[in-house]
Amino acid sequence: MASYPLLLIQVGTPPDAIRNPLGDLPLWFQRAVGPDTETLAVIRVFEGESLPAPDSVKGAIITGSWDMVTDRLPWSEATAEWIRQAMAIDLPLFGVCYGHQLIAHALGGEVDYHPEGREIGTQAVRLLPGAEQDPLVSTMPAQFPAHLTHMQTVIRLPEGAQALAASSHDPHQIVRYGRNAISTQFHPEFTPEISAAIIRMRADVLRAEGRDPDDLLAGVEHAGEPLALLRRFVAHALNHQPTTEPA
Image (tube, rainbow, N blue to C red; front, side, top):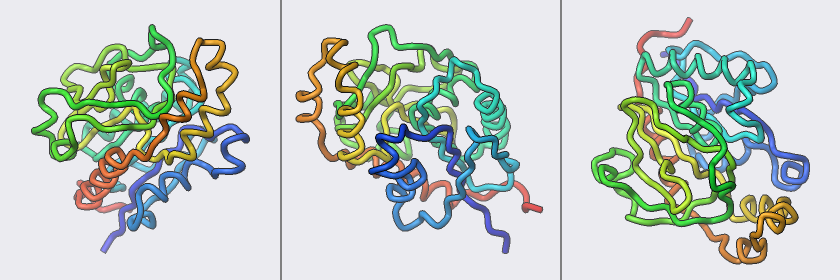
């Protein structure tokens, strides 16, 4: 019987100040995925690694990045083309932050800097009408905490996409693109330690923006619902039957 991996498409790596004490993105996602972590195959597209054909995998998680989708980096645009191919066969996809924005860009949406600046820390996310019918989102409470750090956002959704959750800052916190594709602006893989480390690293910038890093740090808390959402996606993807046998 053929074995199909679940891809972790890594689109960046944290700065040394974050990576050295807390590890790289694959570690964060492996820990978040939990018991099914052995199914993850990491592809570091930002370093030039090639993606396998979409019909040879169970699905893909696309990570966050310290780059910007609007830079249109060659590896990013190549990944966007892969996303379009994956959507054509209804492959399960889960985008996170940069991955969330890249899916929207790949499918014809618009990504740019948020007109009101960055969103950071643990923030409240609320479900939108229609979320109660979504197979992955319907069990989530009406409001829940989530870890965030981003400056760019999905300004305009692709045709046919549906926003399922929003924060006071960003109307597109969870987006559904089809039967098997979903994405989040928030970071389900973040722990409170990761969220706090990012706030501390940005402390001077936050003060310059009129934000109080101490207040943000005091608000950091465990965000269990986003983590559970990611794990439900993984379970869904692992039950997905690819269209053909891999070579």
